Amino acid sequence: MKKLIAIAIVAVMALALCTGVFAAGPVKEIKDQDLLDLLDGSSTKNTVTAELKEEGGQKFVTCTASGNDPYFIFSTPINEGVDNPYVVVKYRTSGTVSSFDIYTEIAEPHAKSSDLVTDGQWHYTVLDLTFAENNWKGAIKRFDVMNGEVNGCSMDIAAVAIFATKEDAKAYGGNDLVFPKNPDDVEQPADDKDEYLYKYGAGANPTVWVRGQNDKSEKICDISFTASIKFNGFVATYYAIGGQDTVVKLQLLDKDGNELESTDLTMNGDTPVGKTEFKKTYEPGDYTLRYTTGETGDYFVIGTAKRGDSTAKIVNNGNEVADVAPYIKLINAEAGNPGTADAAVIAIAAVACIALAGVVVAKKVR
Image (cartoon, rainbow, N blue to C red; front, side, top):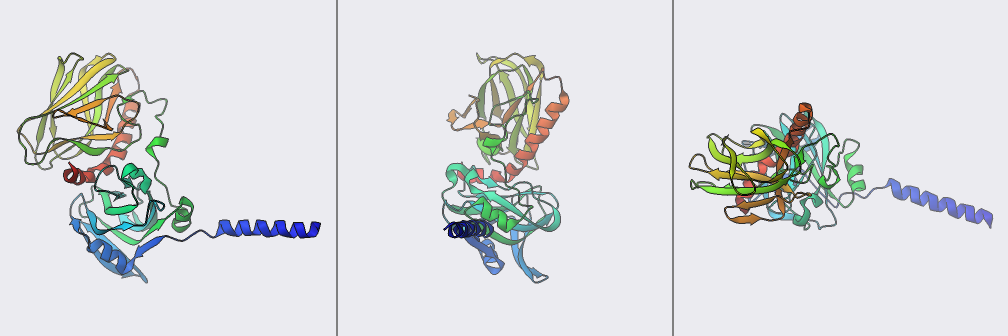
């Protein structure tokens, strides 16, 4: 009897080991001609082309950008269901390509990869489509194949595979597969004394269109906030027309609406790190940043992000913008370590640059 029990235990253990070894394959794998048909047959191709090539027996699609916002919107969305949220992309690229992004709705928020490896060799990257939050409904509607300053850059894509679990995706992508970090899991470092009016670690989105394209009329956006620190400036993300100056008047107001100081912001293109330094240090309390556009330039957009603990409120042209927070960081006047502030600015630039390609999305949804 003991021998039979021992044999049974060994059998169960062997079965468990085998179960752990064999990962499930992709729910869907798109490559070769099917991948070209998906991309080249898109209902919208923005500043990008797709071409099927072959090298060393491997077929792949080369996507080449002719602008800084290359994307494909699919005629028929890829719809494998909400239970399959992990997308692995086998890619090869170089230059200034930062990430591969996916829109599950033509709206924010969307999902994005971690930083891509740009050494011209084949690698895998992975996206977690649940990062699109309420926009993740089981369908994929758009690929932003390259983000960053990518005009003239290209990316080779050998395969796009969809998985149900992280374990299956990892088995497919191998050891260099790095899952993006969820902003909810990123905590503000203890030595960072600045104050964030949004959820620390979240990326910027071009949400608040103070003035739209081809609109030269005066528009006003007020961002009201309560500062818990002494501050002498702030960092924000802005989006504006490139190739010409867009001038915006910026005022800092006290809790009663009185102007404390003002300056003119001269924007030319998207600005992931827009730093404004005040002439003096302001005490903790209630303030408003007022943006007023004039006749100079075209569109002007203020970046937003996921809301954290801040109660900052955005009122854009008389309408309150709900559910998001301004992508603004107050600079602590008493931090006593300029290196900390510079490091924080660099960190913000890293998470904000992937949002530059989202301007066109905002144009469509506003």
